[in-house]
Image (cartoon, rainbow, N blue to C red; front, side, top):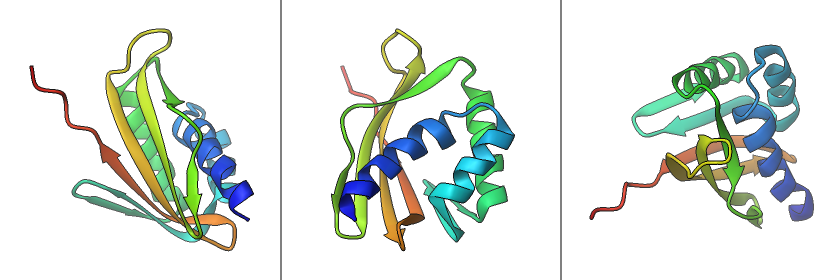
Length: 122
């Protein structure tokens, strides 16, 4: 099953977090996440498909024209996966980098934890 979970995380990055169309994003969320999914950001906990879609809408509105890019393939260890990514303007250096850690249940994401990298100090 881990051979399908890595691509599932990559789909999540592009088809959920990278999808500007809310209706298309909702379809992808229904395919990728369990009904009782939870999304964790620093200081925030989002539960359910509708709340997840609304949170991603806000993320994309805060970064117009930015695109998510995976830095490599997702790695999966049993029911846990991780994917490192960049966010920034297309064709330009990233503005934000981070990593998603997913907990899978029955071939879908049950929980997603997002970690943002701290900026490098000069």
